Image (cartoon, rainbow, N blue to C red; front, side):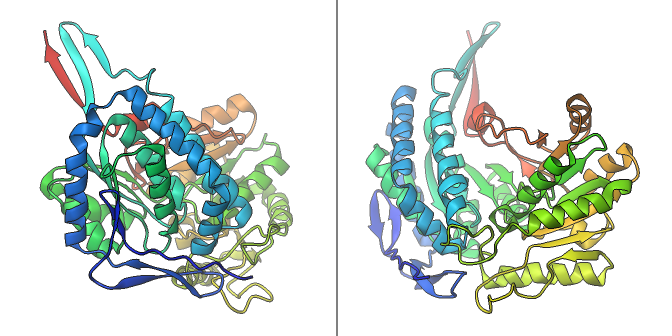
Length: 474
């Protein structure tokens, strides 16, 4: 593998590249350990400049028509699609997503989201009459967006598209671990007709740039995707200025396989949803809940499915699981695998050792545990790696209790006879449930209950997050 080398010369503020003043941060290819780019280590002063640019651009942008803004978004979506290979290669280099997934989920999904949001321009209830009142929905102002490394383009597009359609401007901090796609997005946005200052990027760490964005008095809203711990900190800092905070946080999804399920489909899909993107998906299903009497059958199917996931070079078309996004994250995932063994779960596939033949790089074996105690650490805490825990249950009520029995509530799946599965889905305390592998819908709201966050992304509800509501009495 010959990794590409990328160069990022500065922040993107007011439509221009502006150099940083506090050194740089390395971008490391997790498959090789090589530094492939450097970004500025942003400061609070850099955030001030970006906020000033966004504030200055807000009046003119918010005064444009919704049709105009939708047209800009459509051009942006087309521009991203046209740069699919460039973006995919960058994502694979910066965080190790297998190239096949980078071309599809990492790029194709964001392009679809942009198109779906643009389509809301004419159908959304921007104004409505309630008795003698006119209800008006208006842009909230300057949005601060902070995103993680696991889906570098998807996470920001899910915020940028509705924010721009609503008439807002934005200051964006990408993850310092996966910042390459941010600059490509800025270039595509400018080419699509997003005016200077409407979309700004400040690179840097959460401790410095993230804190400055969260606390800034001229930022009207924070939209954050990432860990629950980081979300708690952002909410705390933002509270001093009473700004709106939308949080899409961690998850510990359960895949409930009912006794009347199509077992091969349920298990195969469940393994996919546990291992996709190396398990580095907040909406993954790392817990597979199965009837106790059928656990051995399920485990055999899961092991067979897991054998089909080749671990290795993420630029290889045949690779199913690339490296973890960093060496530090690899060590965290391995620590959880070791914890599972120590706590008495039955290791049936994989383990803490490096995959065969991969002595360097942030690689982890896809791992499956059976007979997992639902209260154990590997069943309760977000591992964010290719680790599947098979948990037996005695009856349906216990399955629902186990599924709901974590601090999280983001996603889950249910497999079974359709009406039966739907009835169980209604009992789950999560923001999104797929019944029998229901198809992804970019207009359906996505977000969590409990410590998985608040607010929603995608579709009408995702757009509403970026709007203020005014009532005018006539």
